[in-house]
Length: 140
Image (cartoon, rainbow, N blue to C red; front, top):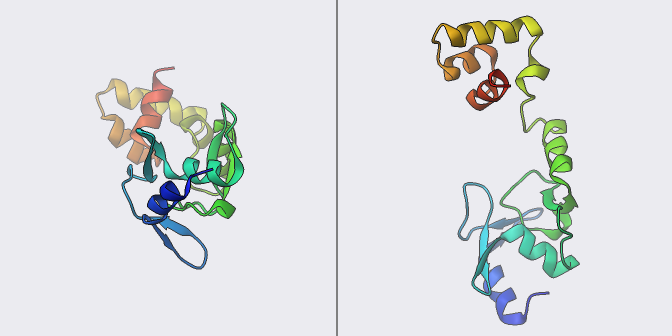
């Protein structure tokens, strides 16, 4: 639970809409950041713990609304990293891996193209996946 002073400071960085509470303070590329006792924490974690208590180690704060800037406690839930990834796939926010998206023949072709010197970025574009997905799967 946040003390009154910390809570006031927290909510200076929140813009409430009819649904989401948007974090407008410091942030990473996606998630709000808030300093508590000299520790910089993700804003969704801070608000979760304030409303619901400590987060069990190994669990993450996930968003029902799919808005990483949202800190509305009603839009948050706890889950494992796997739960969070599955939620992203289920909602279409994350592409499937190369193996899941491509046939075995496509993977062979991707490996062949890489051996010929085609960039991983170009191979990824050809198959509609991220460069990092190509790199991960070609180096298995």
